[in-house]
Length: 511
Image (cartoon, rainbow, N blue to C red):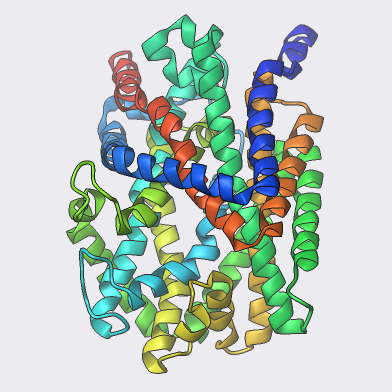
């Protein structure tokens, strides 16, 4: 790489910086100045987004997964991407970075809470009596739908193929705007369309990442209060977030090949140890039984769950769907373009088939099993002794749900501490990787300036502190805001449905 190329890569796109940074700053300021005004704006945006885009998102995610499976069986699926004949990272390193980065928001937060929520209040498609054995399969299957094949596929299967093709083979920017190149050509790369695409993707990722950062502050602060008697107040929550920011900022400064790798390796080892422990010390038979029966229910009702509209119809009040499926789909789609950048960067030397199988098959099944181990253990405890988990979970208290589950295991005190550590490293990995891709988007290169990565890492931490300072309303508004930011991003993802297929067919014809 020449000095001139390196200088071009490290040059910050100031318009993009000002637009995305200004929008995020405005959101934070409005939250501090007038939370009621912010509530009204976000609530209106959420309702419009969920009502008019919900069905499109359901079709988009289903189509992305199915087309990805088709690419795997095409001759072009064997094509090696990224301009390297040998992968830059080992399979373990590669898989660890993908799993830890993308699973952070749900690996612990939702794994404890979502299965128990669906168990207590059975999803409309199943309609079983809550808190009974009849509700178990539906609860597990619905959690699998939200954290399974469709969720992972939209996080970078087709879009990664596109970005690796256009960036490493055609020399186009490794940025969200490149996903619009098949439709708008050079206008997408050099015009305002591209600027809007990049800014929208950055805003969506910041919103999606600030949520886990803020929730980590609430989770760890609650845990410290329950375990050590440390007051669960804003000061403690803020200190936790600042500590998290320090971890992933230091990691960001060490570079992609060291920082994220180290965090991911620690994360995978600790997660594996805890997984095995809970599996053996917890209700082992129930975990395996509910995993296989829940998976069978998931596959058997796959298309019904993927396209479920309930009473919403095409353009109706989404109700349950809006607060569950549409929220998750919006959250994951918001990550889509920038996660594809990250995966493209770490997947050089991998085939199209390997990338899609890892993202759309392997990672979802591992995630589903993880959810069954954590959430299934909670369901088993609740079935054995009603109130064990549901009492703590009352009011949808996710931090309490996790601590109730871990606290009832053998060596519960130690296990609870280790889970809090695991959660922290999970979110640190996401903060690190997201600050990397945001900085890469703004500097048009694989090696963005460390200072820019640090800036965005700190900015996301400060935004999380602002939101938790105004109470739970701030975090809940952020969740609704995530859905709103996903609207433009979902349009950016649309060309991947046909262009990734075209690229793969083209590569197959050359073999």
